[in-house]
Image (cartoon, rainbow, N blue to C red; front, side, top):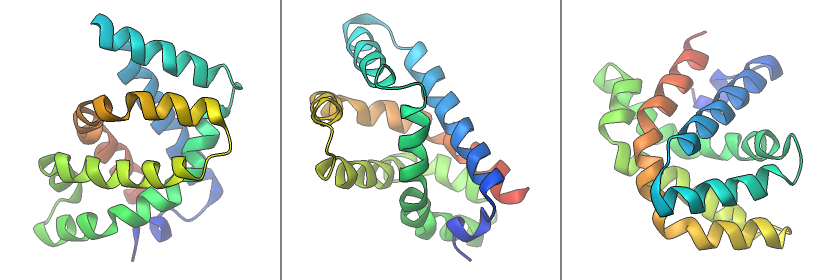
Length: 145
């Protein structure tokens, strides 16, 4: 059974979306230096598009991200602990998540979001890799509940 199927109801999906939005907020808040300033400024612009813009974007991406993570999650299930497995394979997991966002941003109608994403895309992989263990825990909490 795929990850998307394991998160069945809208309440669980909304909770997962909210937890992912909180994770992003926390990750952005910890950034420092010039790169951190750029990320914070860009994130501020994106959040300025609307109070629910980030959570809405996560909600739209979530089914595709979960589907894309299915093979790695399945390998983790076979290994006995999918949360730990995703964390141990954080580079691969980050590539999967970014492949979904890359595909979605190519189709984006919002030029501000597309431009902001493209400016930061090369530098964000490390940030996504860093966030994978927490993302894996969040997914695990919602799948197991």
